[in-house]
Figure: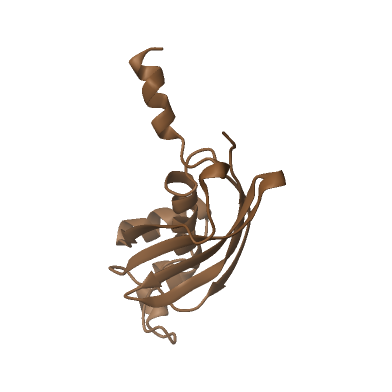
Length: 148
């Protein structure tokens, strides 16, 4: 086997058999102006709450906020790159948006194994995003994980 093929394995995350209840992983990112504008462009969601400071400043948030789904996307980052990692298939997600995220906030997305269903290679996770320890998004997800 060539060196390239040997290294290919490192691109695959945990196999289903390597998961255990309570196992956890996180991803952190500081939200920038560019993140919000690019997310608005890609998603088509140009709600003034996200892109118009003058209008947003008159709301209960006192200014622009990031899209809730931008923070939720960081949960997908955990699944696709950390736990379980590459090869994971996202099946479902429920979310509750608890607090706003603003430019400059560092969002920490953490996913924790809650339940494993071996016969279907499915895993349920508690998912949470925090900013300075405060919950901004929480929910539960189900993913399908490759087997050995």
